[in-house]
Image (cartoon, rainbow, N blue to C red):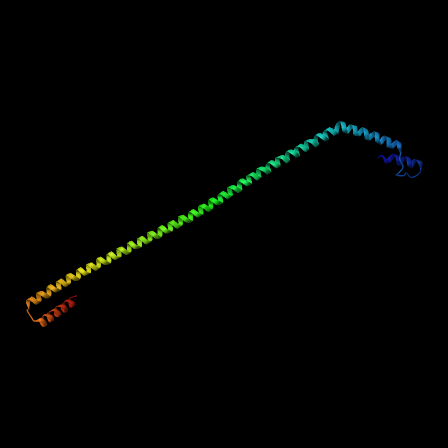
Length: 180
């Protein structure tokens, strides 16, 4: 826009206008317009621009402070969470160790109970066997006594010599075997 009047003047003069020629009238008015615009901007626009810049600066500073605060809170929460996680891990390991010990105790108790039950069963079986043996021996004694009494009564009824007694006992034993 400033170059347009100088071009017009050069066109009126008939010669080509040089871009390096200085027109002092145009230079003067350009500085006057610049100064007026500068003063108007300084009086009306500059305070609003400065205020907006300061508000923006304060908002950024506030956001930075909030971010720093949030970062510190997050770091504190992370440290607390890691501490709690460590405590939970140690509690879990302690619970696992306690469970292993309890399982080992239960296994030992079950093994001991089984061993005691086995020993009790074995003792009972031994007692039963001993009782049955005693019963069988008692029956055998009673049978032997009965046999002895039967043989003695046969011997007393017939007074024979020792060969005769022997034959009598053998025949009686044979008759008993046939009866069974």
